[in-house]
Image (cartoon, rainbow, N blue to C red):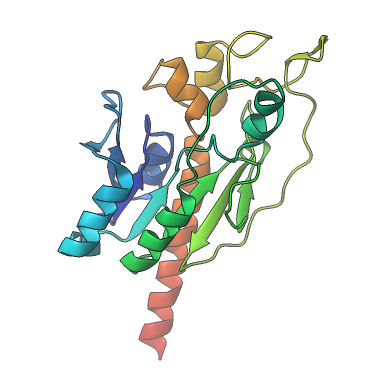
Length: 235
């Protein structure tokens, strides 16, 4: 029957995609920016418009699950805190309400991923690098639409994130896989810490989620589908 097909919206370099592929999915990525390092089939398009076209044309029915990682700058803790206090950056549009309306219209189960902050997402599952033995903490929240998964136990962190904080340098077992300077991780350190080896672009690494997160989500989803099938057969 082949591998189930997953639509990866706002795909960036493919951190989520590689995790879902490891879980057993075939993946199609969509991003408004060219992503030559994306390791699977790629469509350059504005994600919301592309999803709307798929829904209107019926093509969305080819997919089993939709993953989405919309831009987080409008609601992430860094933007809402330090950047805003220092008047850095620029205004950002919050895409999640429009995205969710389209996802609900699709009729498919979905995932919306966001970092900690004020983004309007349910925190159905929160994942952390320590759960997977990674060299980053990188908390990420996941809203699960049309399906559910029992979140794993949030393990106690083994120490601090390495780097400078308010003029004080802290050592620790985790690297800061975002930004630049101030003791932030090098490209090679980010690759090792997150388990990503197909891109060496700093911007892509700082935005990526570790593939282990998406692999856990994908396996949880497929296990749930299998349980539902077994229940239908037994009925």
